Length: 295
Ligand code: NAP
Image (cartoon, rainbow, N blue to C red; front, side, top):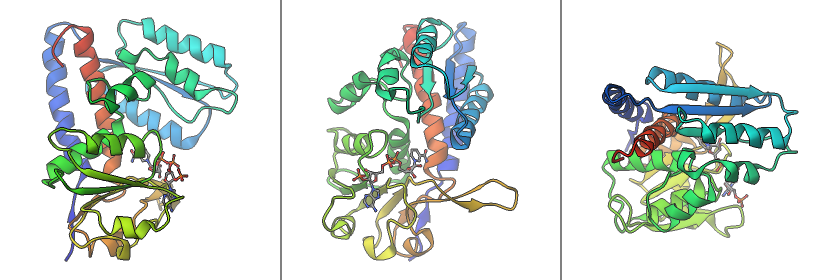
């Protein structure tokens, strides 16, 4: 069996068209969603993520500001910058690109973002609301994966979902979303990590396997149940393409696993485009909430 390819690129394009249409409708009411991105330091990966986020925001008709500062910025100056955008009425979403330089306390910076503008969904207030199933801002990567799974037609209710990885930005919120008592969720969730005794025993039970380990080939074909839906979150730089761009590989051995799985996301073109799209969706929702509209 060869798996159906779940194209995040196509789903993302579809959602972006819906966002663009809403932005046009909001413009008639004098409302323009605004996103501020803050980039600290020279990390090439962070640079390309932030550039892509700004470009997408502009393409969709958002007000978009990018702040770029050297790695020597003080924590106090960064906190002041966050505060400036907390108070800027044209900005509905603030994104501080992580990781931050070692002398800055990431948790302090995340906590300084107004929770009502925390479109990344990393603020403890929004994480708490996610856990108790209340509206807030959901972390973009797992929220994008929920969309991909819903649109793939996979049944989540009662399904065995195994999440590989327990990071605060992917693994943990992913598990929480899948276990919610809600349509498109209601799954039985297992989370595995580096201290799990027999990881393959768990992954082989998964109807839906979500892999966010950050290591290429963490999941091989023998670890996958025939017919499973496999979502590969990993973006590992494994070389350079002929055009000089970073060559990416997921966490899953794609070529072998696609012969076992029922459906699978590719890397690139799977989860990645969804993450940016959900950031845009959160910013749109924030703009509507700030204007007192239903979101
Ligand atoms: P992270 O913070 O490094 O967390 C990785 C998690 O995977 C940890 O919980 C770790 O366990 C676990 N793990 C690592 N190797 C494992 C193994 N061999 N077996 C079982 N568990 C293992 O990474 P992250 O931020 O969650 O990101 C994961 C991957 O997704 C990265 O490649 C990242 O670049 C990618 N990503 C992509 C997007 C996107 O939009 N496409 C967005 C976010 C992240 P311990 O906790 O025990 O150390």
